[in-house]
Image (cartoon, rainbow, N blue to C red):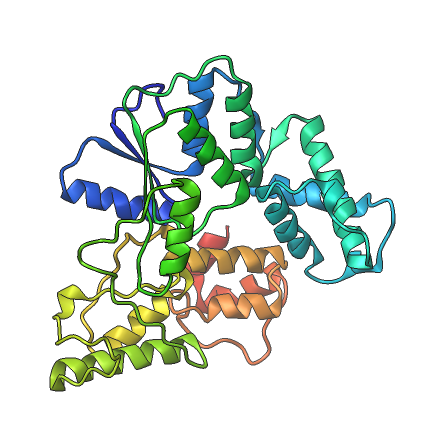
Length: 363
């Protein structure tokens, strides 16, 4: 962000996906006075406003390296350190503790697991402090401390900070927003109202803007229905069948309580890793749909093919992973052997008469 953002309104959103969604909204409304930002963008802007030097933020690989070092160097070796998945579990716990501004010394040591967590947390935070580094979990904590200690606070003139899309905030985020409000930063908060979490929305607004009553949208909450099945495919098939039936007969199987609104008035939110399944099911039932976001290269079949090739190479072209690669529709041009070769030279010898074009790629 530049020192003086062009927009008069800075819209703070929870994630990159939300930023893309809001950016599309502003483009449709031809509103050039809005800038959609994330927490790290806000922290950079505050560093410019206070003249503070930014600490380097570690990347996820560095995060896991520091955690591994903390686990290895634990002063009290624990048998739990050898458990599968322990690193990921410790990482999640430490991130949550840092986001809630819980000091390592406050972690109880009343069990084997809590002692391991406390030791790793203490080592992890000590290493970050020693190297003058930070991670994404403590970004807002550091920004707040810098604003509190700064001699100046040069907030962009008349720039309004708008929080949009948050159901809740961590302790460090909430304290930063409260501090900015006490510094006179103009502020608004738009909380999603889906009809299921009005109490949470009111509570968040009361925390951020004490003394101000929530102002519900004149259109009322958006109609949201939560459907659960044994697996995600079952959920999408239930939705697809209900929508087809609703359109054809007027029977509202989803119990939304309105007449059929037309396909253009409906939207379905699914996790990113399930988009493929949802699209497949909807198209199978003839439900007109499209992605609301552009397809990332990592979602494409050829990206997955390249990952399969990397996996086969990392296993020295063993029988299993290379057979899986060769069976891919983009690669298959003939039958695979009954007994798959193992090793690069063996696969090349097998492929020479049947797949000569593949050998050029392997060279």
